[in-house]
Image (cartoon, rainbow, N blue to C red; front, side, top):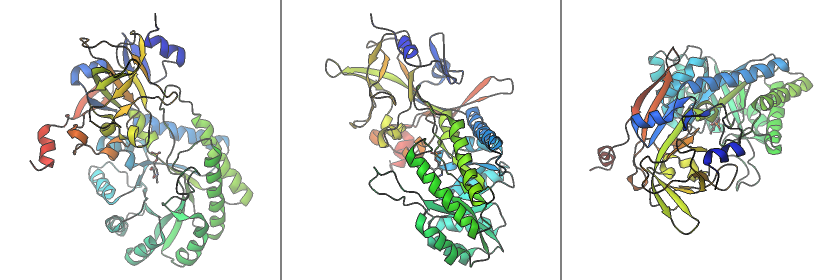
Length: 466
Ligand SMILES: Cc1ncc(COP(=O)(O)O)c(C=O)c1O
């Protein structure tokens, strides 16, 4: 007889990990009884467990605090939340409880911050780092808040022309700015230099010729983001060291420079076998900056980060029901789910992102190799491999079992709606799933509420003009 799914997982991984456990044969996520949630709300559903966001922020702050203590690093660490990873009000409100700063990337982000400010959610000294290529409405919004007296806004120059706009429109006596250095892409990319930021070799010249003569502007921050993420790879450390070297050179010419911004890219668990030593990586980052500054005899910079996925990814999950089985040939078994992977978890399709995938129930069934099919007609709407193997195993179920198999994709809290849209219209008119918010009350009891119903036909047809 074949092993059960539970045995397969126990033999393959150190299960349970801190996020998951089994209770009465059903899966708990952060101790939340998912079977209960399904009983109350049905599927498909997307859930956000808000306390996880604060936990992640606190974790990152601790990693840096320990690393800075260990290396006697005397400048500060500044945690910024990268709003583009999830703009939901509940996400920002939770994040902002943790004494953080904000990194934004578009004009509407500023409208969003104004709303949060009106609600009293933003502390007066919250720094706002404005990144990205800036069309005129974004520039106008940035200039407006600076001219209204917010001294904590730092536009990060993405290109030369951006500075001209500020020069012509900012009326305050002094304004802090940053500068983004374009990193080199990994050699397997088709293009070698990121389109974001100013070329490494042009930075010093740009500073000398354009920024330095403008007394109104103080260059405070050098920003670089290696967008393949913070990884223990030769490529990452290479780019990182290059940027620190540039920081040191620039600092000697530009005394106002005080901060290095390392962007985002701290990874999250995408499989039960995920193995990443956060403390080690952050210690390396701190120690490399310190060593370079000691060698060049310059002050240590404040270190800013803009972790998006790390902040919000592990707070999210998507749960689907298996609503049909298909055997396309002797070996190929398909579990059809009640939504689309392509439209609801677009990273699975667009960048071949893997998430932790676990059944919620039926752990004592035998395991079998399967493919998961979404219900659009698109042949890309499927999921059939895990991060650690190019196969997928789940509990075996028969057709027409009374209780369906429920499948959870975990740590899906970042970017998915921002890529696919939330609501709106989707491939084959597959609706956005319902969205549940879960939090804990002061006695540690879980509280859940419906944030949005599953999208209705009326909602979709209205958009389409019917
Ligand atoms: C400038 C910048 N900072 C931070 C981030 C966040 O990255 P992550 O979600 O990987 O932490 C991004 C993501 O694209 C980015 O472009």
